[in-house]
Amino acid sequence: MLLHSAWNDLTKVWTLPVIHALGLKEPARFNELKRRIQGISATSLAERLNELDQRKIIERKVYPETPPRVEYSLTKKGIELHALLGDLAEWVKKWDKQDIAGAEKVREEKLRPLARVSK
Image (cartoon, rainbow, N blue to C red; front, side, top):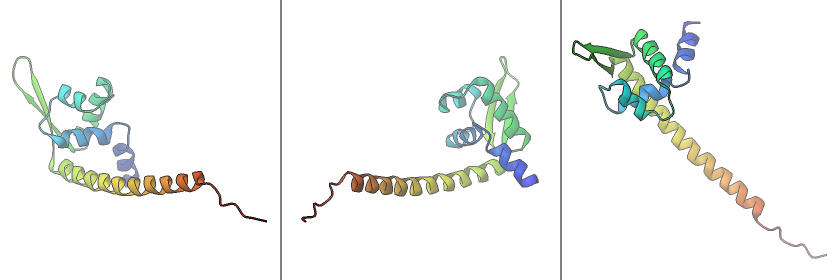
């Protein structure tokens, strides 16, 4: 049950892109992350950052300045998860490439004219 809960949390919309974007260059501020993740709303980003902070995957550091500066970075746990996502990305690239090549071959075979058989 605990495992399923963790999977469900990690596979929520925008969670993995947030981890990926933060892993590209850290620390990062809110608007930097928003620019890196095409299409994410400020509300969704704030929710995902809060959830990841609660799970100790990211760290939120507030600097006592005026105006306050907030930076996000991956924790040790988050760095390990980011590495796993890199492995998953490689797997997707490998199999998508093969699936695309296979689909192209099938499409070409369907388009190839049939040989005429003489009677």
